Image (cartoon, rainbow, N blue to C red; front, side, top):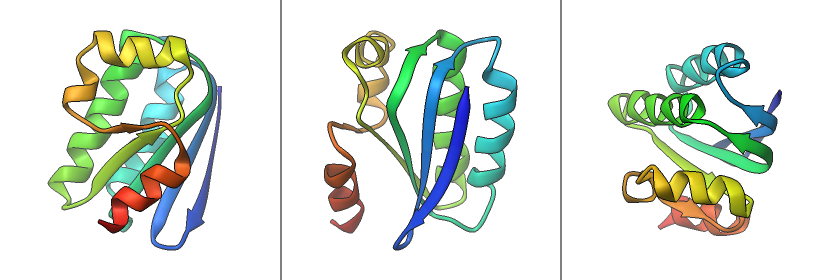
Length: 112
């Protein structure tokens, strides 16, 4: 599991690569919590290179979104592959947070 961050305008982009499951969830949970409690209010989770997402990973993403909302921030997700998108949809995640097909679409949604 690899996680990297980059700043694009006023959006903190988090790129996640590999598998997000119970084995890797501890490290990413700590990083996402720190970001959610930090100064950035617009956070984009780019999961284009995420190969696998378990229920433990879904919980971490949801917790991050709630922390950001509590700090008057916002989390958006973009670029899931078909398998990861299926997990998000099955978990009902798409009714809680908007998932965008591309990073460009997610950036546009922050602006509107």
